[in-house]
Image (cartoon, rainbow, N blue to C red; front, side, top):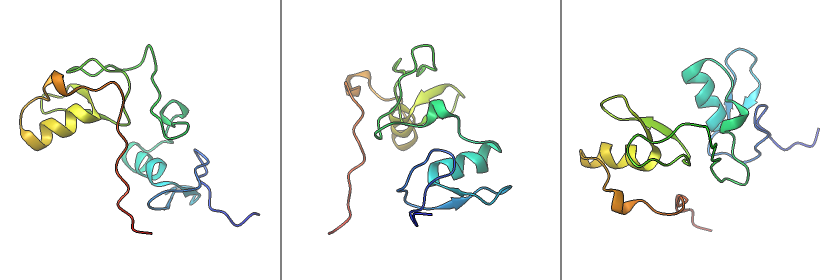
Length: 116
């Protein structure tokens, strides 16, 4: 054993919070642990990203507001429509749909606020 923690499902070695599978007690990263907690089954491989970039599945879901197929998280708006993370967060915070003029070409990563 190398001593490095690793997610049993996605093999991640870094995460903001380590979790445990409620049934098997295996180590899970935060994303896989939350997925299991909410849906009662393992996070599918299609949702696991390589190099922290979202996966664009050509025949996969599409945002009902901006039409993107590439997002880090899928959300539901108040009407129950599937929307990308950017549209969902904007509408939740502002109470109105995100203007399409704000749609960018790429997804911006969350800034790292950790001090060295």
